[in-house]
Structure formats: C-alpha cells, structure tokens
Image (tube, rainbow over all chains, first blue to last red; front, side):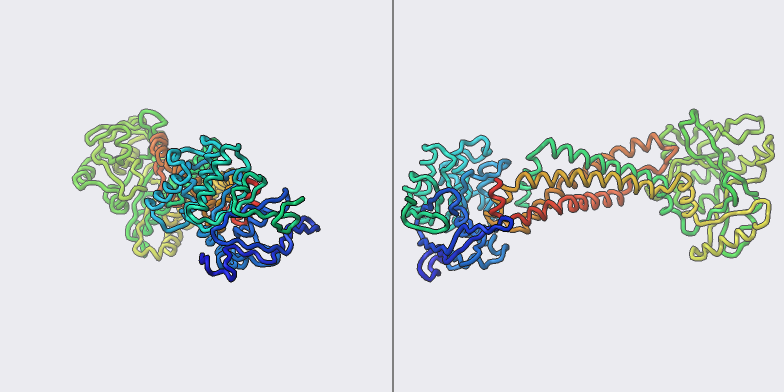
Length: 235
Length: 390
C-alpha cells in the first residue's frame, strides 16, 4: 500500500458513500453521502448509537462490503472497484481486523490462530513461526502459545486476536468494539496495546466503540448518526 | 500442505460425528472390497481364460456326458490344434465341507493346454509314470498338509471302483503352482486312464468311454467363432450334440447360473454408496453451516473464495479417503481369512489390485460429490453476513 498515493494525503478516503440494504421491498439507507478521511498514523474512534452504521462503514473501509454509491480509496487503491479475488488478496496484505468477540478458531492453538494470515504468504514454516512468536510477544502472550482459546481469558483471547491482526504488519487496523466484551481491566489492557501499536509502531487504527472511555484513548473521535458523520456527539 | 492442519483440525472438531461418519464410510468400502473379491471369485476367471481355448460340452447340460471318441474327430476339424477332456469326479476328502475340484485328465495334453499350471519337470515325469498318480494345487496341498509321496483317499459321490467302493486312493506325485495370482491352485488332477479302467471293470457301464467336457486348443484365436461352429456342426443330429464356446464365455455362463453377478454387486454397492453419500453429505453440510462465522473470519483475513471452496472440498475428500483406505485395508486383511473358509466353494477369492485402485478413485469421487454443495455454499458466503453469525 502506498500511503503517499492518496490525492489528499489521507490513508483512508471515503467519498460520497451511500450504503443501502434491501429487506424485501424496503430499502434501508444506512449511509448517505458520507465522506471520511483518515490520515496515516491516526488512531480514530468512531462512535454512535446502535444501528447508526458504524460497523457498515468499517466493513466498507476493510473491503468486506461494497458501497451502493461513492468510492472507498485506501492508500491510493480504489477498493470498491477490485474484484472479489483481488479484494481478498488486498485484505490479506493491508488490513488487520480485530473483532468484538475475538473470532478465534476454537480448534486451533493461539499460535496456529495467529499464523492463519501468514498461510496466505510465501513465508517458510520457520519464518512464519518467527513472525508468530514476535506478534504474540508484542501482545504479551509468548507464554500461552500452545493454549486453545477455551483455556484463555477474554482479555487473552482478544490479545491473540490482535496478534493475528498485526502478524502480517498491515498498515491499517480495523477494530470493531475490541473492548465490548471485556471487563474494565482487560479492556484497559487492550486499549493500552492498541495505543502502543499506534504510537510506537505507527499503525493507523480505526476503532468502532460505544464506550467513551475507549474513545478517549484515540487521537480523534467522530460520531455517526443516521448515516451522517459529525465531530460532535449526538445531543 | 501448510493448510493441512486447518483441514485436519476441522475434522477433529466434532469427534463423535466425524467418527460415526468415518465408520459408515469404512464399512461401505470394506463391503465394496469384499464384494469385489466375490465378483473376482465368480467371474475373474474370464479375464484369465485362454483366448486359444474352446470348451465343448453337451448341448443340453454339462452334466450329460460326451463320448470319448469325439476327441479324435475334433482333432480332424480344420482350425483345431488338439483336444483333451475332463470329467467331474465330485470327490470328498474326509468331510463334505472340505470341498475342492478333482478331475481325471490326460496328463500330457492337459499340461500342454493349461500352461498356467506350473509343474516341475521331474514331477511331471513321475505323474506320467504313476498310474494312480495325482497332482494337486499348492493351495490345497498346504490346506491339508499334503506332500509328495502321500497317499490320499478321496470318496467320490459319483464313481465307484471295481469292488464297488467309492473311496479312491491317489498318490500325490506333484504339486503345481499358478502362473498368475488369479490361477486356481485348489484342484487335484489324476489320470484318466486309471479312472476309465476302473469304470470299465466296475458296475457303472453308463459312464464307460464317456467324458464330461472337452477343451480344444485352436490354431488361430481370431477364428474361434468359426471353429466353434464347425465343431457343433460335426456333432449335429448325433445322440450327443455339442455346444462349443470360448473358455471365457463358458466361465461367464457358469457364473451366470447363480445370477448376473456384476448386476447384483452393482445394485448392492449402488444402495450402499447412495446411503453413504447422504450421510457424508449431511455431515459436511452441518459442518459448514456450524462454522459460517469462522469462514467469514477466514475470508476477512484474506482467504479467497476459491481457497475456501478448496478447504471444504479437501475436508470432505480427506474424510472419504481415510474411510476408503481403512475400509479397503480391512477388506484386504479379511479376504485371506474368508478365502481359507471358502477355499473349495470360491477358490479364486481375493481382492484384486485393480479393485483397490477403483475403490480409491471412488473414495475421492465420494469426497468431491459430498463436498461440492457445502463448498459452493461456503464459497458464496458474503463476508459481512457471515461475520454476523459468529
């Protein structure tokens, strides 16, 4: 991803995006003419009530869904115009996802879960093992590599999820309520980790959250309501 | 190979369900192997039949005898190299369940027309020199622990000795092997002159000078049909009309007396594999449905639709191949045991190598067929929708 390739210096450039879902004969307008720019290296928190379209926007940025209208450009690449195959390849190289419910494979150990994105690369087995070890060390779980998700706490599972997201060294981390299923202490540890990745490793992070405590850790917070963005919370 | 552990760990996710499905596949392929062995035992001889050999039997039924004088007449028919004969002896060794074939033959011609029976030269010489001599196949010799020099009493269910007794004693002078694995090495052959002389002197005048059937060696296998017609024409309108056919067709007709074996086997296997198709297909469909969310995660981190499809197909194929190989392996292990029990009834009972390859091909096909629908479903999943089901 060429971070300098964007026309306005933003790593993420969402321009005039509409997203309409169809339910039977009814059209549901989730996003309407939305514009968003995220500079490289920013830690952006995206807040808003349930059903406001936060996760939909995150999916569009991550290339998991396509806009009904408008363009989504990430690092100069118009991702909404890529084929499914090219989009999958692009995701594997440039995006790291962190999910609210961790979304780990229950039958794989922590290290095997973290290794999953590396299976799509040409790295050798030993190189993959080295990357996995680095990622798990970065999230403080180098002592739990052989553990299955069911034997890990929620906070530890989310750390594995973050290790999986960063193991390919993506430029953009997309986090969908990463602390939403955790207690305050574990949530704080995860936020510390994300903040560290942003500040020390320059990762650009877009984080969807309901929690003002979590958004306070971000460098900027924007609010989404009824498909529109604003810099002020809903009154 | 780097994706193997992912496929393998998915199979191990629901151990009980996978084990039960695997068991059903194993049983299906074991059955396939055993049925293939039965089919081989019944019709396998067709493939090994000599292309240059014709069988001549009585037109109405093989249990009706033919005159021994036909031999010389057959050898005068254009296209015939030479002819020789055998007769059903129907003997029992110690116990009726110890069944195996014993036939009186003309030793020199018999060995000449059946090169698939390998007999050492000194044993052949001994047979020609011993009127009561008999040669026996390796399998029967090993089964009863017979060796050269043994005297073996066999009780005929048809033929008596001059003194009226049914128990014939033969001197084992040779033990023959088969040229191929499919060669039947269970029969015992003894000399026709000894047999016929005893009939001459005994009370069974109806059998004197008569034989069971003829085997003809022809000069040109491509002329088999024409020679067969000439033979039957030669004996038309006689008291013992003949039916002549290639040896392969004769064996096929023999097997067909208990039904169309191929059709029966195909019908049983069809039913078994259809059931297995449903069982395995259901397992795979459930497996994919249960982990829709996980498939969404894999797609989110960059697995392409084609790769997801390949993973699901690999899983179903792995399940079917493990089951197939295990089932065929068990069949392979069981057949020698069953063959021992059925040595007399089905002397060629073994699992042919080609059946193993067919079985392996079937297991791959089973994996592909049962996996294709779940694989397509997995491939078409929209990532955002799938993630919502995590």
